[in-house]
Each structure stands twice: as structure tokens, then as C-alpha cells.
Length: 197
Image 1 (cartoon, helix red, strand yellow):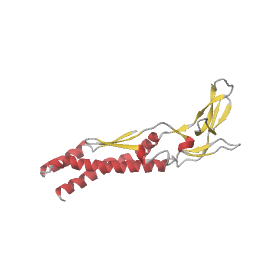
Image 2 (cartoon, helix red, strand yellow):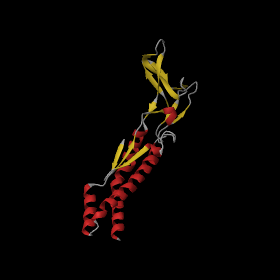
Image 3 (cartoon, one colour):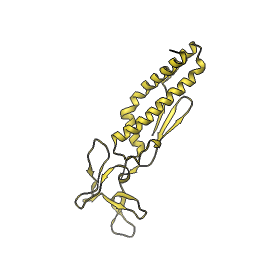
Image 4 (cartoon, helix red, strand yellow):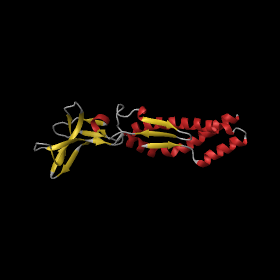
């Protein structure tokens, strides 16, 4: 997931013209850099907190440092990357009992749900297991796929959305529409500081 933080062309050109008209045209880039840096820091912080507010993703699975910030000439790019996360390691889960499958809750506004798959006339329940390497996760049998040299179905770990996808959804639903207003406000603030208003 990648977010570009840059002012719209009309806003930038208006600020540039105003500073040039007042003989302060040499400070346009400084005003722009300060405004974009402030907004990108705020967006990064909000993206982290809003993602944690929307999803049950654990602190160890999504840190603020997972959002990378790279500033270029007239923009800052925020990037979140990574593979899909195992449910047990990254999201709110409960261990399976003899009666129920393992359960998981991905969204904060959702409920804890049993991990069940009904296929080929059978029910495959999710279960907690530890692999030979020591990795603990919630696994499930794969219908119609057998283990090597065995009659049992193969197993695979159950994953949920990646931190990248979770951050993207939080950005789109809760942050994106505010970004340009915030850039305009910061540009005007720094322009007024330069001209002494």
C-alpha cells in the first residue's frame, strides 16, 4: 500500500504566486517541505491508530515503524508492506476446545467466529497447532489435498489480511478525505509565517 502526500496543483500555484508577488518566491520550497512533512507525520500517526482502532491486529504485528516515510521534492510517500498475517500471531483469537473450532475476531466491530469450512460433505474445523520449527498458528485441513505419503488431508495455516491491506482500508475509510484540507491549512500557516502575518 502506498500513499502519496502532495498538494493539489491549484493550491500550490496559488501559494507560489502569493509568495512571488511579495518578493518571497525563494521560500516556496521551504514552505512546501514543512507543510508536507507535518501532514505526512500526522497521516502516518493516524494511519497507525485508525488501523488499530478498526482491526484487532496485535501491537507486535503492526508497529508505527512498519509505515515507511520517504520524502521527495514536492511529495512524501508513505508505504506499508508485508505478507498476509497468520491469524494466531496477529489477530484476536481463542484456542479451540473439544467442542468448538478455534475462533478469531478480525474487525473490532465484528464478533469472535469459529473457523469452520464445510466442503466435500465434511466439516473441517480450524485448530491450534505448533509446527516442528516451533511456529504456533491456527491451521485447517485442505479438502481434496493429501499429505505426502499419508491418507490424511494436508494442512495449511489460516491467514487474515496483511497490515498493508488493513492500513489501506483505514486510510480510505477514515483519513483520505481530510488530507488535502490539512495540506492547504499547513501551506497557508507556513506562508503566513514567511510573510509575517
